[in-house]
Length: 238
Image (cartoon, rainbow, N blue to C red; front, side):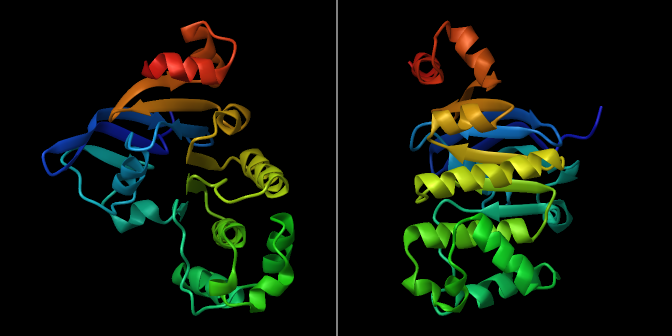
């Protein structure tokens, strides 16, 4: 069996006296597209913060490709886009992309950057504009472009569709489809069950800090005897 891309073993996390993650056990395989869904406050972003070692844990363990998540080496094959992505306001788009690639010892290639902007429906003129002048959608596209230009094996995206119009959402899905064809791994959180059903091999429903369901969207519908994933989700968290 291949080493899991991610393995969470009895993960626990508290904020003060409140436990927000209750013994999470989860494995995600290499090349799998996996969606994490749940209400606001369910613990989705906390789970991702723990994964990336942005906050300490209060029990259990996390491994990325078999390496402890606290080791810098574990995150080398990974690109991440946070839910509230805010690039440095004083940089223009080009400088931001150069900066992000430089942090990873990767070269900036202008034609590749322009090709990626086109693929995400972001005007090439955005490269010369300061990011403080960007709309929410433009900012999101810039962050996605930085992730995809890094050509990583694993992508962790927190609400990647946030702020995107229908055309941009369709183009992002096309980019994700290309990643799937090359064997990349995707772990993303979303409130949009339709996106999860369209994109994911498997999904997890996180509710009140616990995993209530793990399996494919079709298995989720079958398990709860519903016609739609939305109905299954509501039955799961009832």
